[in-house]
Length: 454
Image (cartoon, rainbow, N blue to C red; front, side, top):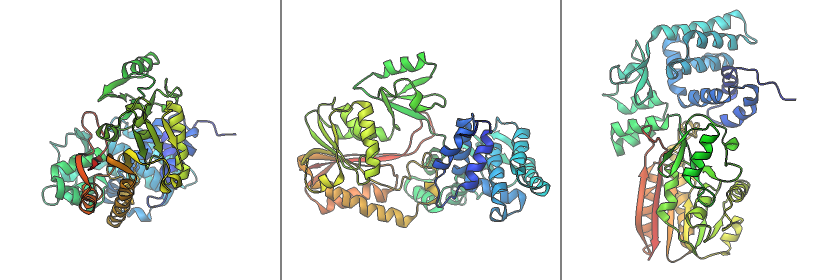
């Protein structure tokens, strides 16, 4: 029998973080196993993901105001402290007394009075140094303020972050828990202010957007059905942004295949490719099938679409999404069939390649702690090889849409230009780079380029 849902969100979050290893273990599967223990599922999820997104900044606060190296703090105590610091610094409407009180109680399970006293002392010490839990970044010192959003931050009474003016890369890296080499590269390419906006977009609580399946419904019809069920949403660039947390699979229209979750930036690749009814189309790296089904919708189920992926296990997810959304024009096939020349040649190929995920740090929270410059270089070699493979499967005057969820030039424009330099039979029709944004209709980062065989 499963345990009753009686634990608090903080208790569950602290347990997930206690088991979490930033270098090796994904937080998501552990969180999924423990969520049934609480009826505050959305809050527990926010506490876990928010703490991990801001982990290095949180640890900096702990070390600055407790004088203790985090590596020397017991893992169970550290988990409770980290959740408490996250709430103090990033969720300003939560009462201080409840944050400290419950952190001490969580730490007290299996610990003695000395350990719980330490947790209490650390958190109350941090509280004493907070000037304002919701200050305007424009009116507060950048070296003393952890940024929560474009409009607000938590201001302390002591400089503990590198100075923005003298070393913007060090400041952004420390403030947003993003590797220095990544931030330095963004500053070099986009400038300090734009790099700061990228960091804000990479640390936001991402909105949930759904793409309406036009084979079955219209945006207006889905909005009406959602509102009839008490679910609020708003139109957003042809999609719908859901307002408030929701269990997606339980929303009206999900089972019937009326929609699929997709970010605004990721949805741009298929319109750029502009596939037509009657075409033979290949989705070469299809899993989990979000763009595959978009191809079917865009062509009104009147194209011949073949979807495959090198990961056979993830290919089952493509089959599930295709079936749920009623995309009858799609055939899901093993990668080996494509490699041996079956099903082609194609009028258009969607090539959504494996990448570093630097455009989706807000969603893939562990990536920032694992991505390395050498891994980006290795991925670029794989991406170029996939682009070369795709070219062999294309008809004359056929199109390839090369896309990533990375914002690294090495994986985007550099790969495309290396391919064009090596193969004079193609021209670049269009390319777009979207940078992560926390403003307005917030969105992830993504790149797409359309190439055409001459």
